[in-house]
Length: 171
Image 1 (cartoon, rainbow, N blue to C red):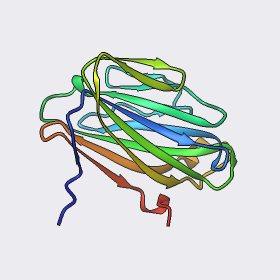
Image 2: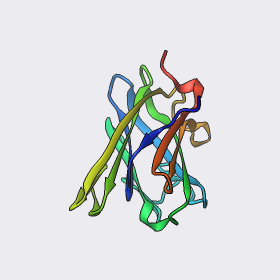
Image 3: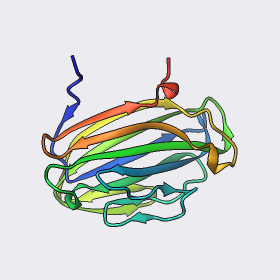
Image 4: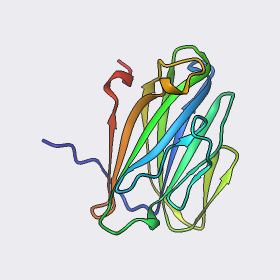
């Protein structure tokens, strides 16, 4: 049977790339919307902080911790299916290569950026999930950006699917 996916209402999706020193240092991320429109990619190799009014990036974390992107789902039509492509590469050091992609959804409120995170004020979190991955690509070449996976959110039936790039899955 086809996987149902996660079901939840959302006005905002926050995609957080988590990386520790065990995985490496300076995971450069690339996030872009590929449907129903093309937002252009955001991240270190695509130096823009905003794909306004749809997609926003937290800016480049050159150490360890997190980088995140926020998708404003209120800017899409009620029956849109939004596809978000996620990719990364270790800019300076790859150790194990392990990282995680965390997705949080919020309903209502307003979003603001704090450091490398996006914070919701006045709304409520409607979902949280995480996917483990491994990024093998390393060392300072943007053209080596490696796909991590695609997040699909269907606004009409309020479901989220994550389709990993198979080569990135941990055993």
